[in-house]
Amino acid sequence: MKWDVIVIGAGVIGCTIARNISKYSLNTLVLEKSSDVCSGTSKGNSGIVHAGYAAEPGTFKAKFNTISNPLFDQVCKDLNVEFRRCGTFVVSTIDSGINQLEELRIRGEKNGIKTELILDKKKIKEMEPNLTDDANGVLYASTGGIVSPYGLTIALAENANMNGVEFRFNSEVENIEVKESSKKVMTKEGEFHTNYIINVAGVYADKISKMVGLDYFKITPRRGEYVLFDKETLKLNRPLFPLPTKKSKGILAAPTLHKHVFFGPNAVDLDDKADTSTTTEGIEEIIAGGLKLLPNINLRKIITNFAGLRAVSDTNDFIIEETKIKGFINVAGIQSPGLTASLGIADYVIDILRDSGLELLEKESFNPRRERPISLTNFPNEKKHEFIMKDQNYGNIVCRCEHVSEAEVIDAIKRPVGATTLDGIKFRTRCGMGRCQAGFCTARTVKILSKELDIPIEKVSKMGPGSELFVSKTKFKSVWEDKK
Figure (tube, rainbow, N blue to C red):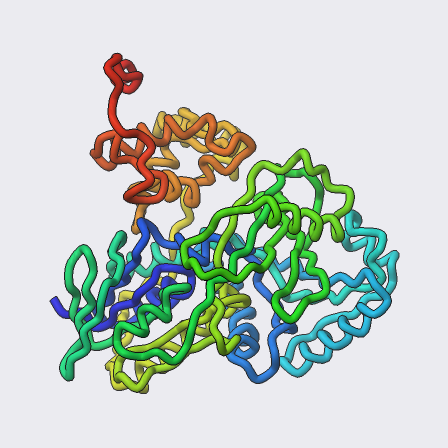
């Protein structure tokens, strides 16, 4: 089979592009080196939908941030993804910081973004009671918001798949052969032929580009570490940014949609494109940075820490273009505000495909809607009882911290682009994201995965091949056999 379009990479940009392409009568394939969508840069994302004041005017970052921000309301409504337009603060705690806030406000105006400089300490405290008393001014952007980066990416992938896009996981691209009539993409899982390739491979985008002989940019992985606090540790209404540096937006304190607060990220440039380790120095750095904004938070409430990588190009801007090789499109260097910019980037890529000569016939059957998975925590007890009466698996709680039932885990496996790993279950159901960090639910989730995927316990993994939890049975009778 020859594919019309192959998308390399299933992060938020790749999945947004795939969903946009699914509106047309095309055979589209997404290749992903990991075992699931949102397994790289997108997973370690802060989930901030930026207003658009921070990017340098005239850059792709500014252009697509500004275009995309207003689109989130409708897209998240269609996909049944929670999105909260709560606004954001940039916080000054020094006298000279007010000038920086004013510079950001003016930059925002150039980008077409309206912000408000607030210097009234009483008003600031009313809007954010737990903010440090040292704050002498904030830049308030009312159009900023928060979204779940993995929730959005999974929803985009599900909707794309519902509309005909095929996903292949554990399919790392090893080489690409370019011929006059077509291109051949070679992976460990087989060869795939196409006329159009969209390279959205995150920190590996330069490597993919080199496979077709294009070596004109470099991607540096920039690690960002985070710490996450237990639910309701402290009330925070919106993301709080410090004054930015030339390198990054700084270490922020932000709420999540599920009532957690996190600190991070820091910014450490690396050579290793797979290094998502956390460090003592990094954790100390982000805690110190977060405490400058929220000094009264209880550090004993930290429940986990993690790290992600940003794909930083040597142009310090997004690279989005059809290359001199017709049909080969680079979408690279998508660092912050990449998640925010994703919707506009995807529309732009469609324009590139059209201009390149690909015939785009809209499908009458395209369905933009995606049904939201059932989550018992969203319903009153009476409704929960109705679910249990229809399916007793709703009454079997797998994750006590997040109140996730067996029925929800099974649904996560059976949905379009369903979960096949513990991480896949976690990001779809929140099973394992609570206070005990999977201490209670791991064994139960493993058992369900084994049964539903019809694989041995030894084949169940955390995040794909090489991360299996068990090697073999002991000589004693297995606990799994007792429960059969």
